Image (cartoon, rainbow over all chains, first blue to last red; front, side):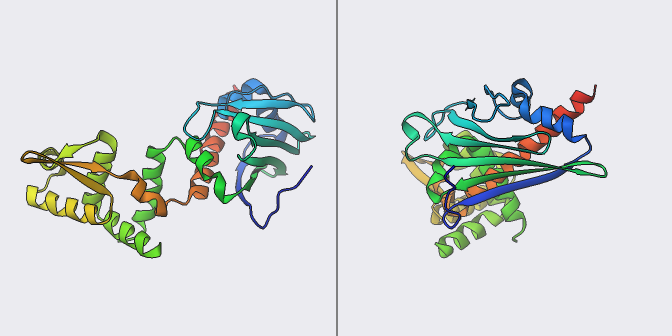
Length: 148
Length: 107
């Protein structure tokens, strides 16, 4: 696997402790119908090397389909998939990796998601994904609340 | 760029001005009278806010006879938007949905 150069790319990390057994969270992360309930329609299968798609509504700068491949599958601890732009946008579009790490804690499990590989030029794809205006204004509300 | 951001921040830090801008962004072109109906302040005060929004590039005007119509220019916000932090907001939202699903799976 070619690792993207970390100097020019950025990652998003979200971490949250959840009061559930790791095995149950693992199911929600690896069963196609369950993934669809909280993330996106998909044809995921828990097999390393399985190629699948996430499908969403197309928007300007994004055709609505992400080409993905299962990279890592270590139940119930570690899961990773590649998530790339597809079709005509594949060549210059987003090439990213989503990695999930589950660490058992006293109260349940620490769920960590890292989405890595963002380049400055991937902004257009992000804008399509974010759904545009309401989010922009929400973000703005938070930013301006701290001013005055 | 930072000067532009400063101007935008100052312009939108005023809640009344932000409300006028959001209304134009949401509902499209409006006259000063339509805006005054909703703003809860006088027409001259609304006009003054529109002038400040215009200077910041957030609003454009179009004259039609005696009426002036105002329109939001959302692209003017671009320098303010840290798109990575908003992408993170997307994932936090998905974490919320994952937690909701896990609660339902209990039953």
